[in-house]
Length: 123
Picture (cartoon, rainbow, N blue to C red):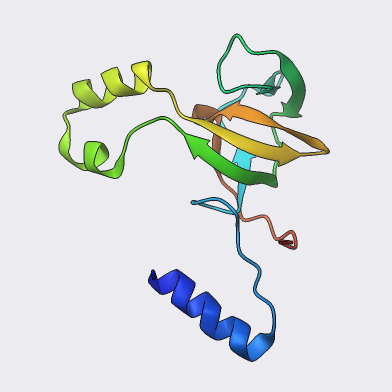
């Protein structure tokens, strides 16, 4: 059992409830690196040719993290050269499933970063 799970179990014994994210990483993301006159597309599936099912303003915040896939592993990130990392990122781009403004879908992770959003997390 991980330390986080142990802490959550202990907290639940004393408080009765625990709010935990369903995905690894931050609870929420915000849009980054998108031009002021542009939007970030939300796709039905995690690839650029997938149907666009929504858009997020360049200032979009509080995108709920539902899990990510692709990209570098921790081991790759720590041990490979920049050239090797770039090649893997090209072959295995990172996409994250998010929920935003009533839409649930996939965004290219290059355009999101951790958010300080303070929304209530519900199980």
